[in-house]
Amino acid sequence: MKVAILMGSGNDYKVVERAEAVFDAFSVEYTTRIISAHRTPSVAEAFSKGAEDEGIEVIIAAAGKAAHLAGVMAANTPLPIIGLPIKSSTLDGLDSLLSVVQMPKGIPVATVAIDGAENAALLAVQILSLKYPALREAMRKYKIDMEKEIIQADQEFQKR
Image (cartoon, rainbow, N blue to C red; front, side):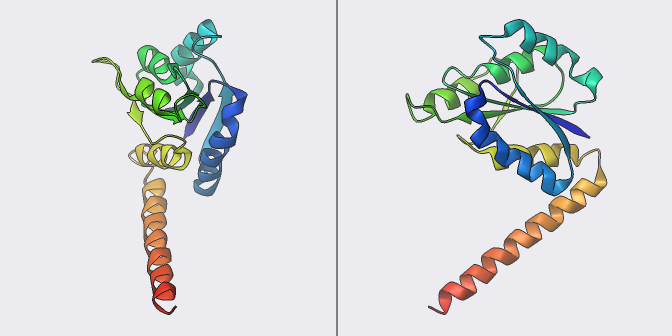
């Protein structure tokens, strides 16, 4: 199982590294690259067309502002694409969110919240879990542990 995490700029890494941490926790192999839909369009196209042959099963595309990286990936591969809109200084990431979520018919991109790297990675894990039962069990455990943490926090809160 392998995920590609693409970011339109190296400035996006402070968000993207949170997705890497999730993959590390689930023992999912990943590769992280800087590929711009606008500044390196031929690289973006070649990557998306060759990703499946490289063993990649899910692509996370993180980008800010115009944020067309996810759409370019989705246009050129049958693999599932998860768009990760990055908060930009211009419109607090709303521009990025709208660019990622407003895909034309036939070019679906799953989209998570602005700067929602953890959810992008968790969604990729859930997609991969359809093929890898051990990941499904790990995701079950993750959700149970999350529930226990909230119950514990609530109990501590009630003691105050």
